[in-house]
Amino acid sequence: MAMRRRIALLGWGVLLGGCAGKQAPPVQHYALGMSRAEYRDYSGSKASPCDAEPRWFSDELTAVNGLLARFIKETAQAQDPASPDQPQQLALLEEGLRTLPPVLKVHEGNLRALQTCGFRRSGAFPDLAQRGAALVKEAQGLMAQGPQIQAAVALQAARKQWREEAPAREEKARGTWCSKDPQVGQPDLYFARQSPDGRTEWLFCDGHRVEKLADGEPTLVSPENLSRKDRRRVQPQKYLDAARAYPTEEMDREPGSATPPAAAAAEEVH
Image (cartoon, rainbow, N blue to C red; front, side):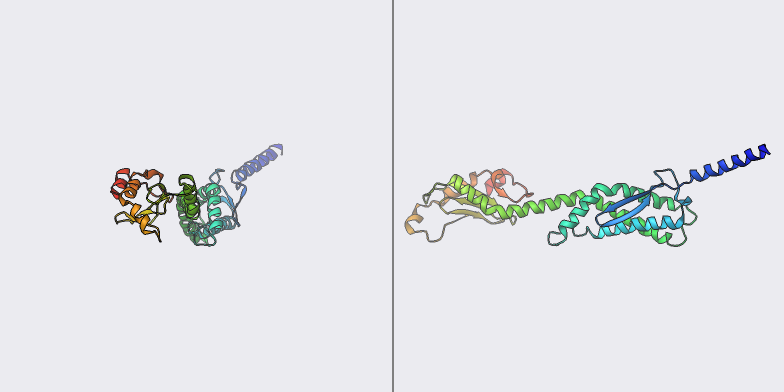
């Protein structure tokens, strides 16, 4: 009798040990923006989703698929400065770059493990697997492009600030390099600007400027209402020479635009 009881207890121990070995990993909770999802990391816990309750596993895959779809949709305008939703979408993208990669890795592993399960062709699993694989690939691509998108948005902001602050920079340079009563005919150059369209301007304290269009020759432009007497004081070549001597690296130009080689800039105002 005692022997029979020991055998029975041993049998229960083996059975319980087998169940414990197939115990599902704990549920993990993830939030991204306004989206929420619960999932389990089967590969990380050395468990198999094939031993899980299929309905629960289906719900988990559905939840993560939905979160990824919303993330992709709600970051589509992150790089568009014309979109009123750009700030929120950019913030969501930045949050995803920080927190989403581990979830993507787990989801990809769970989808891969699904293909070994006997129930993989039943219910919603075929659609979940196909949609999940596509979403994972698209989200991974978005993760790879994320830093470039952030850099592009930062450059957009810098260029906007450059345009807005252009008058203040010009006025500051005038106050720094020009006298209170500049003399007409004195080619005192205080500011040079290269516009995104390729137009270059060299500004002089007496109101003159040398202007060069992208593919044109530099020309001297005199201020309006210049008297005949003052016009006789102006020697155009001196202004052109001053523009030619201005250091190209000190030109005011849009952030991200290339600095022209010094030799090329010198040729422009010969």
